[in-house]
Image (cartoon, rainbow, N blue to C red; front, top):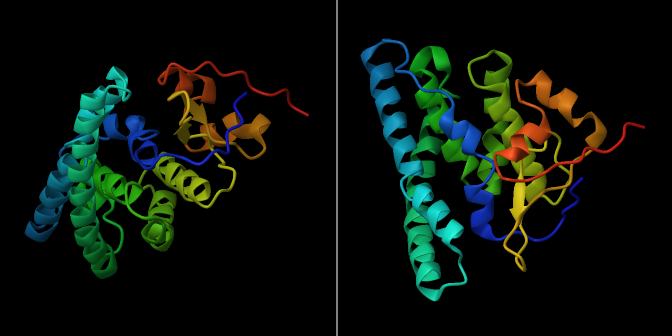
Length: 218
């Protein structure tokens, strides 16, 4: 099993443990009113911006950040992405305060997932403030229960607490390797993951080339 409680590099919080969410939830969504269509299109555009430099950063990380030129390009992409993230969150904050969480029936899954990704990449205080909206929407199946679980884990990790669903990974600053952030009651994690539609933790971690050995149940 993995037991990591190290301090994390800022971009490891942004780049990792969102890959499944990025690939999930396509579709054009409902027709809806003109205002709904406008909101859907705006969120979809913001979602594309959210990912605009992250693919580049992931590729550069695979090349190895020990190379000064690679590191320079990585830092430049990171600076550009942070500016995009701040702009997107400013706009999402306005939407959430005015209209609540943009649910699937209103804007479709792609736009709803974009709202999640923008909040997932925001600051801790924004996440704590608006997580209840996401969680309530997930209970009504107006947002993904897996996304709400991932957000909950992200908040817990950033507060230095054990996560619940095992979605969050961190980077060892010495080795550059990914590790799983510590999980509360880890022997029961797969049952919790199944309840929100997530695959077993070992299967999830294979996507990051990590081998997982679950603890024995007590």
